[in-house]
Amino acid sequence: MENTEAIGEPLKLVLYIAGQTPKSVAAIENLERICASTPGRYAVEVIDLKASPQLAREHNIVAIPTLVRQLPVPIRKIIGDLSDKEKVLVHLKIGN
Amino acid sequence: MVAELRRRLDEAEETLRAIQEGEVDALVVRPSDRQEEVFTLEGGTASYHAFMEAMDLGAAAFDSKSRLLYANKTLRELFNLGVGIVQTADLQDALDDKSRETVTGLIRQAGEAKRTAEIRLVGGPQDLHLQVTAAPLRIGLDTGLAVTFTDITARVRGAAAEASERAAHSIIASANEAVVVCDLDGIVTHANAAVAGIYSGNPIGKRFEDVIPLVLLDTTGLLRASDLVALAVGGASVQGIEATAPEAPRVKDLLMSAAPLRVGSDKASGCVITMVDLSQRKAAEKQQLLLMGELDHRVKNTLALVLSISKRTASTEDTVQGFQSAFSGRIQALAATHNLLADRSWSSISVSEVIAAEIEPFIGQSQSRLQLEGVDALITPRAAIALGLVVHELATNAVKYGALSVEQGKVQVRVSLQEGEDFMRMDWLEVAGPKVAPPTRKGFGQTVITRSMQYMQNGGAELEYAPDGVRCSIRVPIEDVVNA
Image 1 (tube, each protein chain N blue to C red):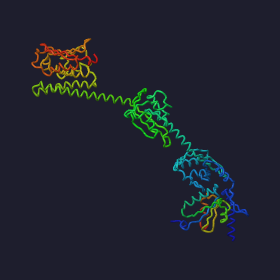
Image 2 (image 1 turned 30 degrees about the vertical axis):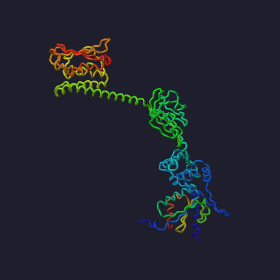
Image 3 (image 1 turned 90 degrees about the vertical axis):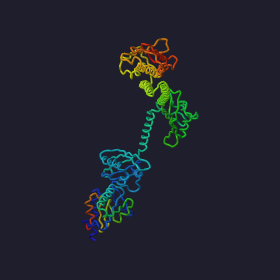
Image 4 (image 1 turned 90 degrees about the horizontal axis):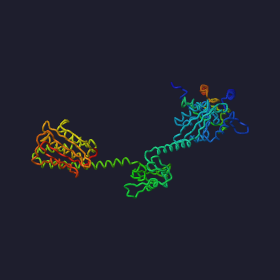
């Protein structure tokens, strides 16, 4: 049986990073690994706040790296380098 | 509203916890009067980025999990990585399987100590040789790795060129052929050891045509040694020209080839002349020509002899059977001497051998019926053939009418050399045979006996039909006696 969550609209995620700080790089790679395990489930946008700091305003970002689940609402934020995969998956789950 | 406040409070607490636990390394600060700014914690990255950019070799920083943190401009250019953010995968994609394995292994091991390896990048306009060094590096709060890529292509190329030059030198040095290299002006710049066979001094620095004064064969005097050099320097390749070097110490017959010397560019920078020693081949050719002439001469002589034997036998025999028997007997006698000569490669053979070969068909191996006395001299093929025919006729006659026609009859042969005489004497004496009467008519056999040795003035034979046995005194010209 297919997981019902896997078929609907992809979850829209935004990852905020600051250039190539170690945590930013780690967050990108960890997120890629998570996305690769369920292809098509996530639509990811990466925003480099080092290049355009004003974009932090939209989601009120303070700490970097931060992953934002933009859709579906309500918005969820996960702070850190996303190395704890289980914790990330729990936060991203719909209805949480 | 309360829910919203609670959510924001949760978020603030989470942010604080994340900062405290070191899960973030950058913060967004919003000064009231200005736009947002991003501060990286510990300030580490900016300083090491600046440091890496200042390096003129390719440099990259990896975190403790082997993730690429930063690649400097030189490295991005080296690997054609573009200007944006470079990720671990981009760098990996820029390497082929072998190089990737080398670099990955290096990064894995370098956590303990500095490691170095070499890789090769293919696919670009030219192959790149890189020396990769990985060493531990402290980045902010973390430990990571600094990896540098140094372009050593020029050094590798230089070493390869040097090795190939050494190889070229040793090839020239170990060639069996004499090899001379000249510059554009025809001055000898290199010469290998084999050149010593053609020129005894040091040829370096001298003009080629002065070192080796060659006479080129089959070129009607138009082509000279200096022209060979000029042709090769001009870009033409000349091959297989025979030449002689009359003044050469050892090797005088040569096979010459000349070709332009091209080093790197298309334009000739000199020429290479090789000279193969033809002395042995020339000697063999001469020997072969000599042998062919000799063979031709012998075949003609033999045919003339056979023709004359046939004609004379026919004129003295009355029946076809008689002719057949006499003719084949004489041809066999000729063949017996020929066989002996062929066994000795047509050098001289001994008198006793000739006599034994001719008499054997009549008396078999029986030693008692033939007594051979005196010296056993070596005679030339010419004398051997004539003597063979004479002995054959004497033996035929002895078997038909003389001593060999009865059981107790014998033949004595005595060979003697007297000082002051210009011939070697051979006496044929038949004993214990029937009473001899001179033949009623003179046959060809008699002619053969008396005339065969007369090819020279001091040669000949006298036949005497004495009643108690045939006697024959044969003179072999001293010129044809090789060794007594």
